[in-house]
Image (tube, rainbow, N blue to C red; front, side):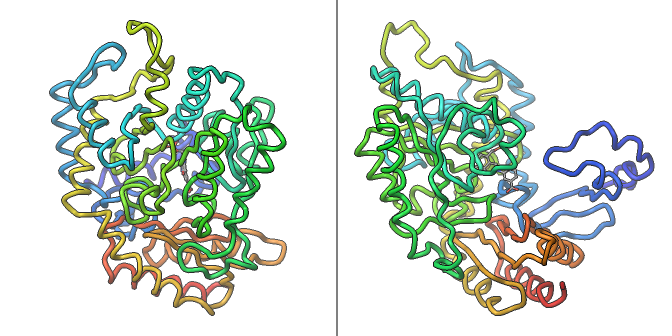
Length: 446
Ligand code: PXG
């Protein structure tokens, strides 16, 4: 990396103004920017030349580590050979190849793949697909959607409607389609310091029966949940909970959607969370790890039942009135195919399952250190929950995040939670270093 590239942003602060940063306090970032200039394997390099251990896999996406040359080369080759072709009425082989590969990786008969450009678009696509499915079967009144508290389903208006984060919804309330929410499954009194799936909480799935009584199931199109809620603080599902949701949805003809934008492509020790947790939904949404984060892409994976219901009417008519200019973009498909090859070569899903017990053991050894009120983990993801400071919610989490960064480790503070989701190539020594830094940080911060 040349000096000029490293130094440029600092020499002209006025040039920071134009980029309106997403989900960032723009003014404070621009007053004290944090730059990354390079990334390779488990590490970023920041503008001071420090190596920073990436405890977040970018933003839950760089599953095989940064800068994998196979993916870079595939992108470069594809853009020189066929930079763009629309997937509306035209084709290129990488899109078909990728859909086929994803279908083979997905559970059961979830074999039909619709491409999007992000997780948010994948969620909106899945919700529309659910409504269209019922309509195609003559149940057009099934339009009601059910999400869950403490869920993140992206920033589209459909995804926001089913999402369970009040602050995300607050400014846009009137625009959101009506949706109901199941309760979330975290209850520290019953679940604190559970290893993996808590034993308490399966009964919370029965709240779905209550919503069915209220609205009548004949009006409900779909239930969407993250199999493991990720960005709201890593909530592994209670044992038996997803099984119960599956049984209730099946009983009432309601589609079950798993939002696997985070759990897809290995995070919890199988290609999809559905497989790791042995519950099969009707539709899966994915993104992030699909291309190892190298280029934006999402995918919706539908079961045969859902797909076939829409394949009706005259054969020369469009079956699903939906799509994006960049659905199945050649460059994204090439990146995703290369990423899937890398995952296979690294045996990444099985490796994650093998590494998970060590991750769990090391993290749970932190129990008893100051401020720690919960540790949650599954696969290679975890959250530490800290008790909040008096009248200063979030300050302690931010302080621990800052401490870790000062020691060369990037973690994701979210309020008083520290979320950890490293690239799945993490080694034992790197887990040790993360855990030791967190331990030192917990002792250090007030
Ligand atoms: N579903 C889930 C489960 C997600 O986690 C999305 C959908 C939306 O994906 P896109 O690609 O549209 O961003 C997500 C995104 C965090 C964080 O801080 C998490 C996400 C995005 C940004 C920040 O944990 N997840």
